[in-house]
Length: 69
Image 1 (cartoon, rainbow, N blue to C red):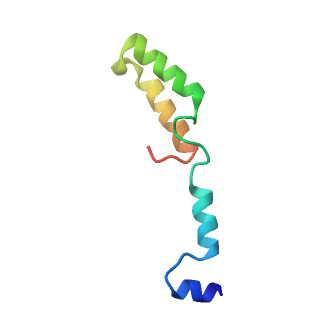
Image 2 (image 1 turned 30 degrees about the vertical axis):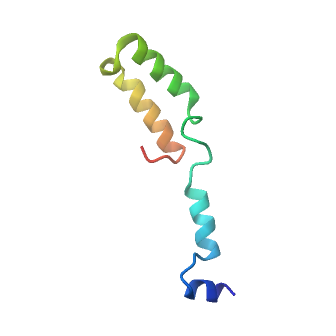
């Protein structure tokens, strides 16, 4: 049956599993709460230009979680 699915242009089962594993398991708003909090507090107190260290740390955390930012 999987041969027919591949011939019809639908995604095979192994491809579905690989795609599911590469997607982030959390929503972006819920990922990396620690770095998000530090980033947000820094921006409120000092402005975005002074917080590049925390902004980049949060981006790195999000990338580690599987997000493309």
